[in-house]
Length: 95
Image 1: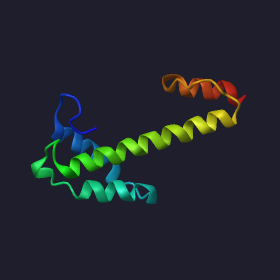
Image 2: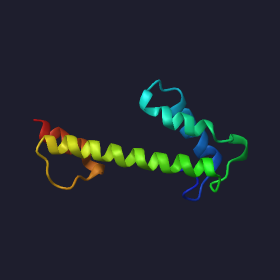
Image 3: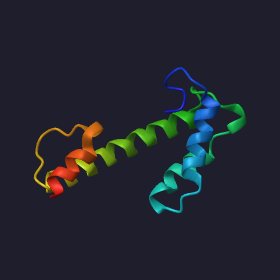
C-alpha cells in the first residue's frame, strides 16, 4: 500500500488518509485508529505504524474479496472470479 512500489509515500499516505478519514463507518474504525498512529511528518515504509496499517489494509482487502466471491457464488457463479470483469459478470448472472 504505502511505499510498496516506487512512488511518493507522502502522496500515498495523504490520498489514503483523505479517502478514509471522512467516512463515518464503524467498520473503518480500526483503519482510522491505525492511520492516526502514524506521524505524517516522518513517513517511512519501515516505520512500525506504517507496516501495521499496511498489514491491516491487506487483511481488509482479502476479507472484502471473499465477501464479493460469496455473493457471486450465491448467484450460482461457481467459477474463479475475474475481478477485472466482476461488474459485467454480476450483471449477467443477476438476470
